[in-house]
Image 1 (tube, helix red, strand yellow):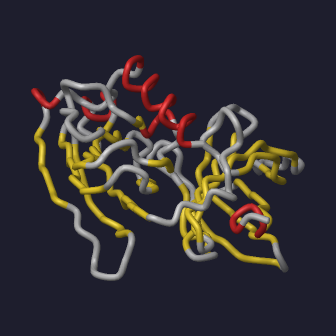
Image 2: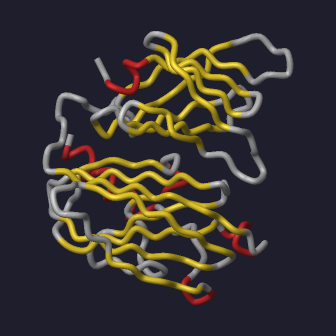
Length: 248
């Protein structure tokens, strides 16, 4: 697993360009992230506008498991992760949020300060859009080796869920991939019939939100019937089995 992840990181560093606005044209703010004593993570709430960029610096060690997810009311918001010694705007990102559905989990390759950079994609920045966001960071020494990734993906499990897009259309089947963070916390990425993706966020066994944006609005609600979560986002409806979130 670690060899595959290291190979993925190397390929990403060599081939993947940075998508966020160039720091030469951005208002950059740096913040050091420290977890409260006895915890392995934190949730940061913030707001950016236009070409504003926030760089969160966090100390971690090789072999630890890092999980990062971004929830925003603007679909143009995204994050990049830079390895220790890499400079945003000059060096390529280790992980690009837009490429992994704004949710990432993996084993860290080195000791040092990692930079998690939050900003808007170029078009959104040029339009001077605003994004309210919630960034979740978890760093753990107890990586669950039994919950292995599906080969060739960043997901712990893949399959299909019952879905409906509304407008009188019958329910169908939509592909999904889930990234689990343990204790009932997970991000479920569903591919809609038109090819767009919808990410549904779970914390401690509860569905707490989805990646809606100004261009893709929809009121979020969640309920549960036996072992099935019923998720509604505007006209959309999804049925997600509890086992998808907890594994098993």
